[in-house]
Length: 293
Image 1 (tube, rainbow, N blue to C red):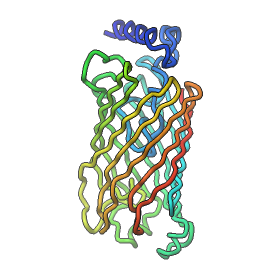
Image 2: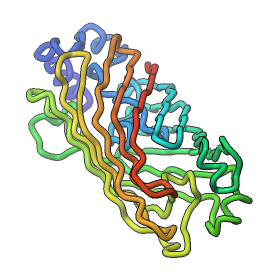
Image 3: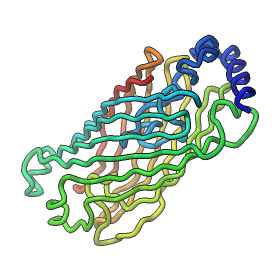
Image 4: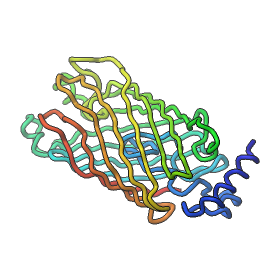
């Protein structure tokens, strides 16, 4: 089966050289995945889109290789700023290990809430993703998508403040199941997933609250189109919990991802993260730089 897959991969490479893949690199086992199929870095550290993880494993490593990525992301909203940095490693196109750190600057809102201007919430996120079945690249003659399961454990550094705000937990664990299908002929990627969580604002504002302290499913998904070999556009959506006495609303983005080389990407997006404590939706610009191998 491995020999057959390698032959199929080489054939795909010859057919879709316009996507930026080279058959020599595949034959030698060097950075063998299709150009841009490592995705970008999701804001919580997993490989995928900016808001939603994909079933694909980060980096360009094949089943005989180790790949990886490192990223830095800034989300500049109307009243807040989120900075996320981290790295991930992909083991033999099967397992992904990731780490990310969030710094959420409350700016003037912090002073209005009695926390102090520029008060910053911080959290660390440790992730594991495992590919279960399917292959988004090789399975072009099947409707079965690539499916993966992931876990993200999140720990806040602001436990005392969260307790004072009536938030019961400063740490929590999200479990997600995601399916990704790549249509090479059409240059389209579809992704959909379900996340079991009780996080408030991705965990930045802790877990659970006065309205709900149970883990419940939320939806997340992406659609991406490869305009040319090094440029992709798309949209994403992600629903969120309403644990704190107000409706957070879903998060959305519309993005452009540019891959100047196979090992680097720059993603720009317009993002709407819904309500974050104060009335009104928080919208703004998202920028992310990723290096991968």
